[in-house]
Image 1: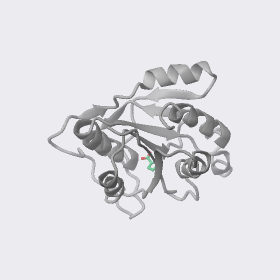
Image 2 (image 1 turned 90 degrees about the vertical axis):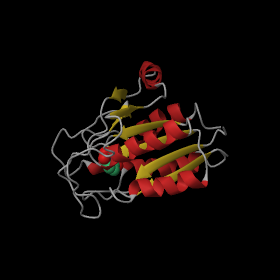
Image 3 (image 1 turned 120 degrees about the vertical axis):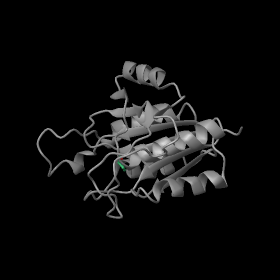
Image 4 (image 1 turned 180 degrees about the vertical axis):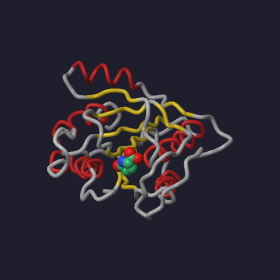
Length: 203
Ligand code: PCA
């Protein structure tokens, strides 16, 4: 298998004007411009379209590693998601104004799929460098989890590629008009943390 790496992020959603995951993709495009093996892709925050956009890219090129990034506004650390749940549960509409019913993503499939990448090892190594990371057990019940579950299903079983979802906190400018104490993490620290993982795989 080749060693290509795909990193995805999401468009802003639910009233935000930026999404830190999309900002990180812009940084990756600049900082890894000389790299030959990394591609980036922005996904819509849409239950109907997000995975289709990813799948189109996966059908064009094959990847050894896929890093899916998204915003999780309730988190104060960069979170490596251990599992994609075979479940949708949300009261929030997506960018198409669609709020799905609670239920499984794929009724005949396993209730959850696990990333095969060494998330605990990454997390321990980065924490030892003082970086704000942790392994998280749920990517939630919204679009990110749906894309993660479907990507694990398609990539890990069909191609053996390594897949992980990484949720990142709000950027400081996003919390200015939010309740005091809303967690955030500055872009430099988000980049440093993410790059510590990417540098293991991007040449
Ligand atoms: N976060 C949302 C969807 C898009 C994003 O960046 C989520 O956690 O599901």
